[in-house]
Structure formats: structure tokens, C-alpha cells
Image 1 (cartoon, rainbow, N blue to C red):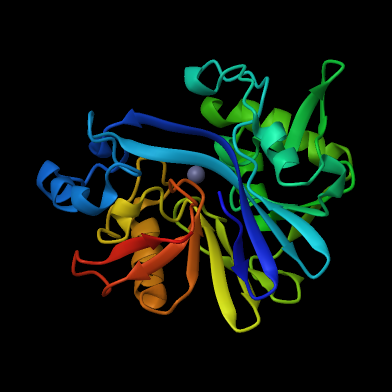
Image 2 (cartoon, helix red, strand yellow):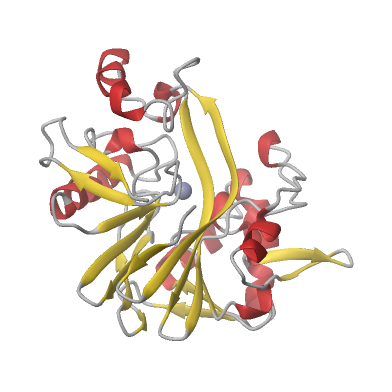
Length: 292
Ligand SMILES: [Zn+2]
């Protein structure tokens, strides 16, 4: 991915993997073949596989360099994780760390880690396996967790088996090592970089806003999984904790950022990840124009 610029801040994607294993309706229960087909023209081949019709998802972190800080937003699935309930994520050895080095950054260089929410595929590289123990991957970083999101999963991981492993091997070791900092949903990370609540996908999901030199960007995590949700923001995903609230948050987001020049950076979009929302709010005609 080419480096994107917002004022004098830079944004790079660190890719873990791409996959194209799911049909649109497997992720978006409200998707109909007719509506999906109406968008294939601008989504193939980068975001919909022309052969299978499956949606293409990226798994990436964003690396932001601004104000002398190096910030990592979301940390993918991770390597060596025991994920027996998710075979595609089980005991992997992806080249994510090589890709980080490829951006001229070592784990020691990371000052701040911010997970937009605490799903399994957003916390993985928080930790790595060292002598049989999970330890923080970024030894000098402060890991920021939205206090509401942390509290929710701290309770839920005991009840929901699918999230338990990730919370125990990728979140708790950071807390136990004293590297975690619980913050409010509108926390300012540094001048021109701040959180904003975006509830629905998970209760404490946040967007990370960046403003620099008159330019704007927003890292929106899983508020959208796929560019199909730009013209169809009413489609929540099967992964949303509260699909109705997720829909409300996403519709408002698309209306607010359409035609504004704001660079929108969801976690799972293909290509560079980032781009602009073009066209009106919710008339089914908006598109996502990828940058770079
Ligand atoms: Zn998620």
C-alpha cells in the first residue's frame, strides 16, 4: 500500500491477510442478490471476487505517524494463537511482522496501540508467544483500551467461548504487564488525534479521528466491513452485538462523511483500505472511492 498523507501525518497499512471465503449474505443477512449485483460494477475485482461473488476482506493494522508518535490502530488476528473455533485463524504464521518492518518500523518503535474494539481479529498482535507465555509485542507502547469496551468483554469472555481465548491471550497479558491504560470514549490521544464512540458493532467500539493541516481522516474499525455498506449502510453484519444500533451509527456516519473529503479508513476494506464516500446519503447510489 502506498503511504497516505493527512497534512504532515502519514498512514500506512500493515497487512496480515486477504480472504474471499464468504458470500455477501453470509455476512450481511439483509443483502439480496439483486442489490449486490447492482454494485458489482464498481466493486470487482478488488472487493468482490468476480469468479465466486464472495466479498474480499483485508485484515490490516494502520500505522499512523504524527506529532513524533508512532501509533498502531488495530492488531489483526496474530500468530500462533489457539483458535480451534476459527480454523482460518488457528495457529497461523502470517507475515504481519515482516510487513511492519517493511514500513521501517520495529516493535520497539510503537508508542501507542489503540484497538477500535476487542474482537479477536483486532487484538491479536497485542501479544506474542515468548518461552510459552503471551507477552506484549510492543515493549515500549502504552495500550489504550476504551474502558466501556474493556468492561463489556471482561464480563462476556467468561460467558462466550468464541471470544474467551482472544481476551485471555491478547488482552489480559497486556493488563497484567502494566501496559494498559483505560480511557474514555472521547479520549484525545495527542493533538489532532482523538476517539469518538461508535457503538453497535460492539458496545464500546470507537472511531479514531485524525485532523492535520486542514485534512481529515477517520479510522472506523468495523463500523463497516465492506464497501457494499457505503450505498447500503442499513446492512449490519452478523458480527454486530447490536445490529439496530450498529445500523443507526453507520447510517449517520455515511451521511456525515459523504462528499466531505474526509478520508475514511475501515479495517477490512481491500486495496489501500482508505478512501472517500461519494454520492448522497442513503439512496443506494453512494460509492467508496479508494485512495492511492
Ligand atoms: Zn469486529
